[in-house]
Image (cartoon, rainbow over all chains, first blue to last red; front, side, top):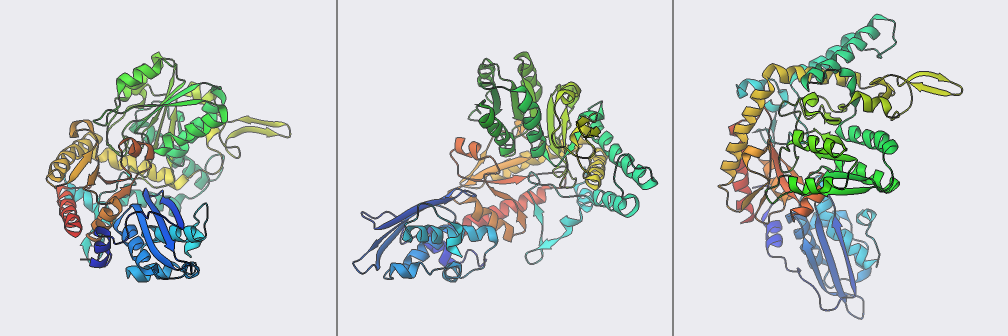
Length: 131
Length: 406
């Protein structure tokens, strides 16, 4: 049918590769989107060179937010933590391959916001992180 | 009731969206669509009579004042209030309730006083009381709902033993659709010495209400949910209460006299209408009640009742769909539901692509969703212009949603 619910998004929503918890994590953060009650936690493990070796998310949300989280975590494995600080809105939209209305953009960007807060080891996530 | 003919009164319903799809509007509990006649009434005012109201000497000012006050009279007749000066024009229901909290609440309540509200309220009938409670150290208690989604009147009776000063409740829930027994609730509140604040945002648009007969102390509603424009609502208050209350906002129109030493307030309702009011919107509001009256609230409610029954029956065939709230007999035209584990935002988005407008989220009732153990729900809400065809489209759309996620 429509672009928004194309196969790749439904696929990552139904069968996320990175859903779950890590036994031990080096970076973690959790936050929610109060508008829709979506809740997301992200945990990362890095090696001695500060490269991501494993990443998991846990929580609940709509197809857009869950598939965005799964695609995002998939894309960062093997990357240095410093590189994650440079991720922005366009990277997420590129992974999803869709255009989004402002309300749904918040769903798509929740995982990026949580990831950046984790990497920066922040106490509170901030919308500016996703710009 | 000839729905095809009623639909013709609403130009927006002719609009085609998302590749020539017919607009199926099922979001009237958020805001209703507007018939041509109310837009024309506001147009005519701007094109022919535009001037500021009250105290003007010239012709246009007199005309504008007359039109503004005629609207107040029409609305008073519509909700069966004999004395129109008991109706204050506000921005909306939310502002009306805040006005009560900030004036009556501020001067009449003291630390330790109890405010009762209910678990099924919209945030606008919770947050103003929380704010006031925080500043004045008051206690806010919630009347529980039953498993069926109705007010637990036994629990209400037990809370009345706390001698609350205010009982604030919705006449009709914007999520559950539940129509509350307002007269009974008000009578019990009065016996316990409390005043009553009724959120009528969902009730006044859909069935006839006699505020005088209910013996409500305060009753609030908005124009935009009843075919009228945005930006205007009403607060009804009993004369003796309004006269004792301090003004809400200060400025023009609300004063009798201002000197270098102070001011005296105008009589009601003007005491509460500081500044230039929403004149065109008041006139549009008057036109909206004319429109609804020309069709008849009994007929509108009967039409909605039949459509609620039809909706609930046809949606109950959809596997995994669960409707929240009481049976059709006890509710108005609001039908909220969950569908399997599918997120309401996904449901609403896929429906939108078929031209169907519904609402997804917590509908400004987060505590209620917490009570129901839901993060969000999807809501279809009905009005006079909806037909069985609209419901058939909704059903088709929901089956499509299941297919996408199966």
